[in-house]
Image (cartoon, rainbow, N blue to C red; front, side, top):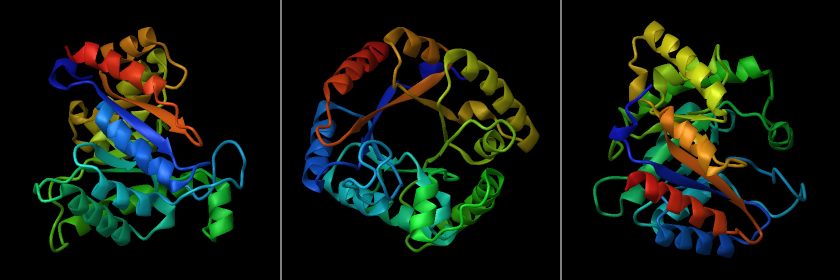
Length: 267
């Protein structure tokens, strides 16, 4: 799929914005940057995804703007934004604004536009969005991404850089075609055998849309994986690995372990 030697292995940490006061989330972000994490992610939901359904929870984009101002080195974004919740042009403007906040005088922002079609029905029901079908939500994502990209070219000031687009999901007919057309990063949830098969399908979509998909960075989560399994995924071309931590305590011990693994790969 790609020459893994051309990209360093990176570790992204998803700070689940649930079951914790914001002060703890802020302090955790600071500690993760000091530890050497490459990317800080949150998620774009309105309610917890585990534990107490009505527990403490915070909104994604507002937090990302705060983290952009607070941090100085790490990249940041949602894993992932829900396309359904905001007008496409507004998404573009919000991303551009967080991009500029994160630049902090350097001229180069650190924002990653991670996005997807949405899936958590309670968010839709409670906040008054139409849930629709999986296919309808994917079609909306496919329709909105060109609008977002076009708006980035019209904004004044424009983004500080080409904002990387991360798309999450593994649907073979629609999602991977969207990835082939628009993504700089594809976030997969696949085991090695499945990833190998889906990479072949992604190449086919790339040929159909005229895209060299070796340009796309491959990302996957580390939940439940061993270093040996991560090695296999890396051998297939994966270079961005993500690990999730959740409140109230945000245990960083697994992060430290995976940072050591990353450093070994990059040695």
